[in-house]
Length: 138
Image (cartoon, rainbow, N blue to C red; front, side, top):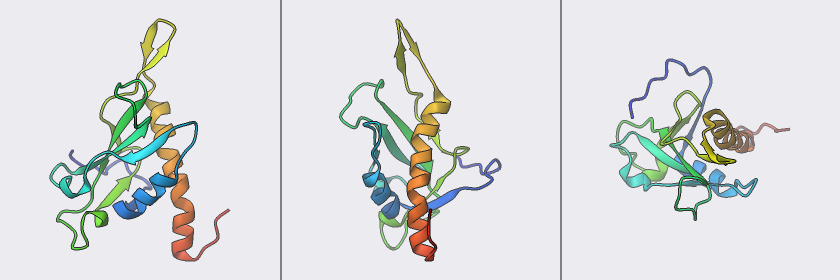
């Protein structure tokens, strides 16, 4: 995955350890978020895979996997949890679009998928940032 940040206006940068903690806490509309790859082996690919949907599902109708770019050039001394990822809708990419039944047709809604995936993560990171900086959120 080649990273092009030309379209990034404002983004969130977070390490895998904090991201993992935030993803574990996320839950809504019976959806789940999880790191869907082994962080120790993703540096060569340049991205971390995050699953969104039903982690127990084996078909594409209930799960979408997103590629989230890694900013590290080298393996971090603190291990794979210290890899840093960039969260912005212009650089986060679905491996394949989600599929949805509507009557007898199969449809895609990539914009809604991205909003449903990314916005809750960004919102969940706000109190983490507030705690880190000593600011009050809300």
